Amino acid sequence: MTPFELVRLVHVLCAVLGLGLIAAVGLVARSERSAASPPSELLSLSRWSTAALGVMMGTGMLLNVLSGGTYHHAWWFRLSAISLVATGAVVGFTRRRARRWIAGEVDASAARRYVVSMSWAACGLVAWITALMELRPFQ
Ligand code: HEM
Image (tube, rainbow, N blue to C red; front, top):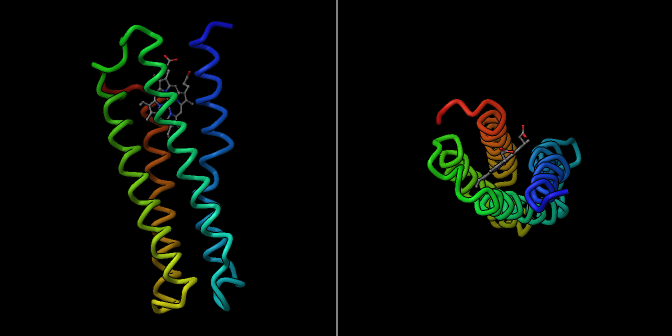
């Protein structure tokens, strides 16, 4: 196995195992239990999903380096890096609101709605990046 193949394996593994945590945040936040009281596990799910996004960015950049810089001129690559930064920001805003929800500093039902919709928005961005990775529409 070449270093490139190894890093690509880590990249795809992290996509499969790590990014589902973003959907988990949305699912936990919309559950019946969350309507009664905010679930504290939202914060750790959100922290781990940020770590997974970091690994995706790191391994994506490393793949470019290992290939001798063949990707960074392609727009599918640039757009995925930009979209990943946007996803990180959305996840970060969501975690901040979840923290305030758990601390009882904001209106609970508005915070719950916010966390659910922002998590779906982050999932949409992940779907967009996955399509860029697989279809490579912009060269
Ligand atoms: C939501 C985030 C991401 C997901 C789900 C994702 C998913 C994938 C998948 C499934 C592949 C394998 C494609 C294939 O071989 O058919 C791949 C390859 C790759 N990804 Fe990503 N990726 C993400 C983010 C990124 C980012 C941000 C970058 C760049 C900074 C990047 C750079 C690459 C590169 C260079 C390859 C190798 C392409 C090749 O084998 O020719 N990825 N990605």
